[in-house]
Length: 220
Image 1 (cartoon, rainbow, N blue to C red):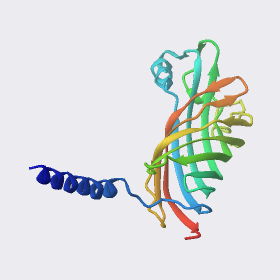
Image 2: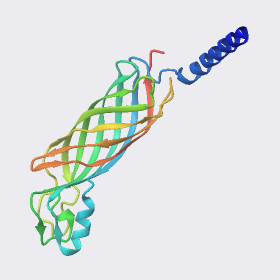
Image 3: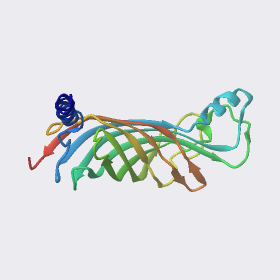
Image 4: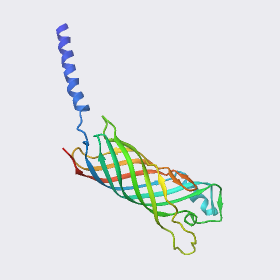
């Protein structure tokens, strides 16, 4: 009886070992010194933006910090370790924002009082693929936003400059890395981006879809 139990114990241990190795073993998605070139798209919106459209029919905008933004362009990743990468790129960044420290009346169009720059944006960031669950992707960065021109400048009846001033953002990301080991692939992650404007800070929440990342260099 004791021998049978011992055999069953050894068999169970062997089976658990085999199954465990299958579940937890994984090939690293990335290797040190890997370089990736990606195609990037994203958007974000402050949660309070609905208040603007609710009140516009009354020609009133409640005080608050509002923003709607988009991103598209290319990104570059350099992996220092298999889990740590540094990122930069070049993005076009349309951004519509308004900072109000009191209610604003007598306006029936949000764009008439909002800054609406199309920016050339240079992102700088660091991201990690969480060890043991490398499909989880998280990071923080700094975005340098250089306004080029205002989207709504030149519209009939609009006599203000909607370009805005240079500003920085602090994107914070968490999401998923679908890149295959040794190959390319996409990523999808959620982003919260405090934007520091001259008159205040807007905090849009959204997502980034890296449509595809090409592995342009790998030591492997």
